[in-house]
Image (cartoon, rainbow, N blue to C red; front, side, top):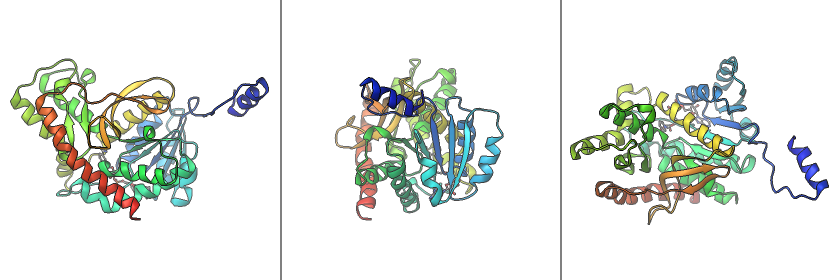
Length: 339
Ligand code: NAI
């Protein structure tokens, strides 16, 4: 039944309908930053996702071309193009999931925090429109520095009175994807069946791969752990340096973003599943946002599963990440409160 008929039928039968989302029938995914290095391949993957009914592409430039191109692919998702701030409202209106890779990427020698000045304002302004047009959407933020952009979006939603901590995510899936690639390669495992949770945040020492929780159960020597951990933490920089000024990870990030968006949509449709994500969390004492495995469902985060059983080495890394995360979080919060 169309939502309107459902409401009418319920009214006449005396039932109360608390909320009707068109979502679980025909999910709409909005992609903000759709013409960029991540946006284009991520749009390609989302267009091929059989669960996506409507893919709304938003950017400040070049969206019509990307949309025309993607719309010629014979998959069911309807593609629409939205260009410039005046068309942002329509792009995100009624969206079930909003994925945000809008913003500048790193060049060699830069940290993710060096992107703050440009990207903080971009995320703040996008979140302000989302707060009005689509306050119930699940928001997946790729834009760096993720450790700060998630608090920024959250503060904007709080100011607008529509904040729901279960609905705002920092996408850390690429850290998981990288860990699974490196571990399966090192240990000769089937990459498609290797699971490595990554907790903390998404920059440098805040990226904490939990190698001790690798599935299938895998033993690592101290030396392997001492080499793998920093490689995973610096993997983004490996790509930035290899691209030598042409940007940061785009293809692997597109895969990671599509995987995470698909997980959110599956959750909305009632298929609970577990992903690592940087969210408002009480998993670790003394810090307000932390990435751990979370159970996704119809309302976004259904359950925070926490860091689980970790090794002494991993616990040290978790403890050491808290101060850095708090600095990143405070910077994001101050940016919104001071503006
Ligand atoms: P890019 O420069 O190739 O593309 C960014 C796109 O954002 C451009 O098309 C640009 O027009 C658009 N844009 C700029 N301002 C906008 C606004 N106000 N509204 C909408 N769109 C806007 O950059 P790339 O490589 O796609 O990276 C995007 C972001 O993703 C960067 O901040 C990068 O650091 C981050 N990133 C995050 C990762 C993660 O694991 N979370 C991994 C890799 C990159």
